[in-house]
Amino acid sequence: MSKSQLFRVLKKGIFSLTVFLIPFVTHAQETEIGFGFGGFKYFGDMSRGISLNGINPAGNAFFRTNLNKELSFRLGLTAGKLAGSDSRTPIDPFTDLRDASFNIFLFEVSTVFEYHFLNWRQENSIIRWTPYLFAGIGIFGISGMDDKPVEYSNIQPAIPFGTGIKYILNPKWYVGVEVGFRKTFFDYLDNLGPGDGVIKNYDYSNRFDNDHYAFLGVSLTYSFYNIPCPTSPYKKNYRR
Image 1 (cartoon, rainbow, N blue to C red):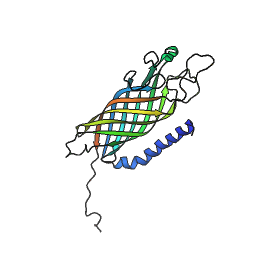
Image 2: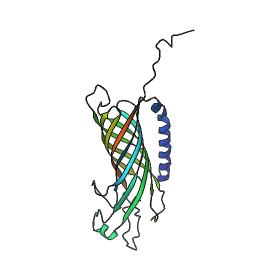
Image 3: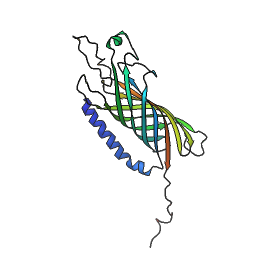
Image 4: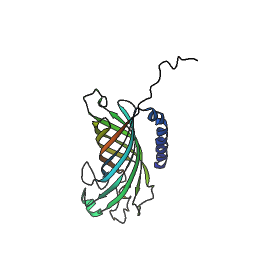
């Protein structure tokens, strides 16, 4: 499957999943909205391994509905700056010769499911926090690439997944900390192309290794409770 075909499949998947979940969202007894602040971290030809170096500011906003005690569905928007530089995070002597850098704006739309491990939302529970895992599908767009080494679309698919911790401040407000990685099928976040082996300008990347990014953030969530209207138990047996 080509990247363009995969992108179309993911777009249809996000739309179909959202439509499918509308009845569950409508009848859910608890829905939430929230926002968060944190940073984007780039992983690619200019940055390897897990490091806090090179994190750039980003933020998100999201809507969440709790499908049951363990499972939640979240629709989120995340945006911020993504950047990297050979001089800032040198990997090897080759990167000193290449001395490349990039600075872009990235916008992401994602849908994920969250799984909570502890019974933390019940009124009679003494547990006020829970770890959770999440995974789903997403689409991101980038801007700032004026000089492209090859032709490519600025809109690409991604697979978000990660973990976090939530804590109840009171029945209406939660705080959370989350680390989420985005697997992409794209090798031009850093705008490094395949290069020219004859010219030897060193301005090229590893074509066998795609670029990825992560979002690390702290969030604040407000919860809405939908109280079902009472009905008469005799209504169904009442006949005129």
